Image (cartoon, rainbow, N blue to C red; front, side):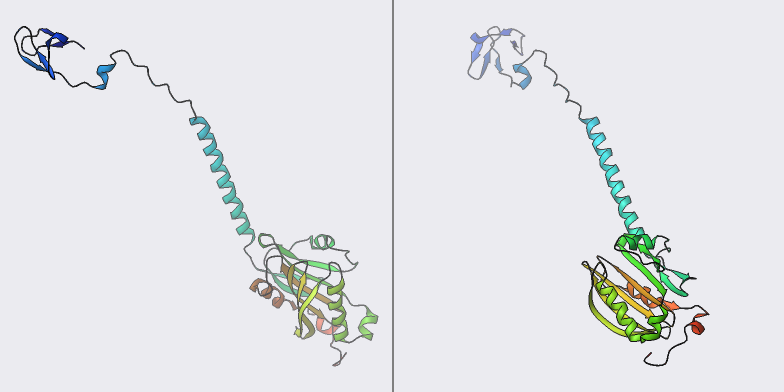
Length: 253
């Protein structure tokens, strides 16, 4: 970079160096050497920094996909929560002459679901529902008592046979506890069953002409769950013809 005398404007050369500055050969003025800046080292045109390769669209697409996944997961969680929330309604069975509270609308395919776990007996009726968000089943099974069984066995013996069937029929079950109760004035048993790592709360009921199995449970639900308790305790025999048809036998029969 060319230097000039600040007083007379004469050009300064290396011959005019004087210590840390210059002394003008024309007028003798002392001129200090100007401080250099980074631009003084390179007066040529600078190359522009190349633009970064465009990741913007890619990041935008990835961000959009991430949002879609997030919303999808949130929607799935919402569906699970919604389907796991009980919406209780009374179900009345004309065929079974009973009423019971169900946590969801009654289904028409309970027999098909039961058939997936074993043979379905002819003449047996399967009614109830599923609480899908909690993988819980609420089922009432009922059928007519064989006349010979009814006339030759006591209530206790019939209930013993029902408990044995629950324990031995596939899939086999473990009877954790059992106690005698009455349901709508009829003899019954309440059981805690464990079936294939699942727990179930069960009531078996016998009348003069019919038998009933009321069962509720799921793989992640303990038998102390209030939903199971509400279901089994809400089961009532309400057929106006039932008291006459199911006239109680003398005690012990």
